[in-house]
Image 1: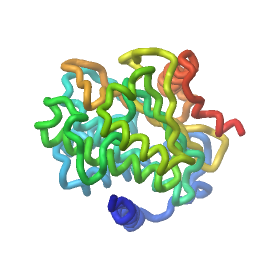
Image 2: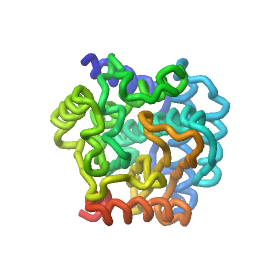
Image 3: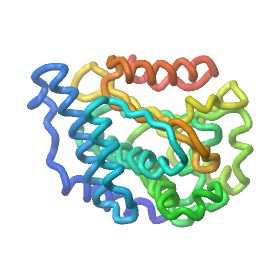
Image 4: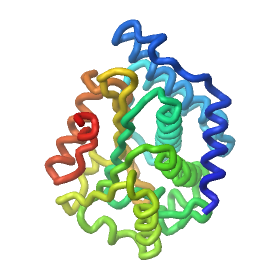
Length: 280
């Protein structure tokens, strides 16, 4: 795959767009530090979205990011059309988190993708998107298709830049992928053996309210931050469902509620403990 040039190009763009963020210059208090860090990350996510010429509905993306910045969480219900702004925003934030880690602005970046089957972006090649991965409603919708194509690159970028990622799914989830998709996924597990971890849960089905992804990181202090999204997989969209996004310190109540919900679910079903590295 011609992955490394793509990743280096993307990283060069992010470096040219932003100057190095010095944590100790703004850490006047816990409150101001949080506001400065989350706002910085979300401002960068807006810039990434703006530079992505393939994604329309930029105004919707910017509104979502602004609400997330102001409130720390956003939850709304609707059709699968919400996928465009939520998954595009997710990809932008995953990208800026990985770049912030390389810049030394955050550390201990650990994520969990918790979905009914292994993560869609890791079951397809970057250059050749496997359309069998996608429900027909997404396969023929250019804007939804773009979110899948982008994340196939972004997830590998995240791993290339040093992020750790658990892929958690129920028993039998791997077998629901085609043989080719399973093979691609296994190849990625081998390629990123030190950073990509397969985790089969003890349950046979996943609670729909737990589907999504959650990331944890620190930045210049002992305080832990989290970014989480509630979404549906591209191979199993829902006609009407709840979508959500959270970003901030895990001690903040709305974020704490979401993080506890996910961590308790993973523990209950013999899943990974993404915070173990933070306790070491």
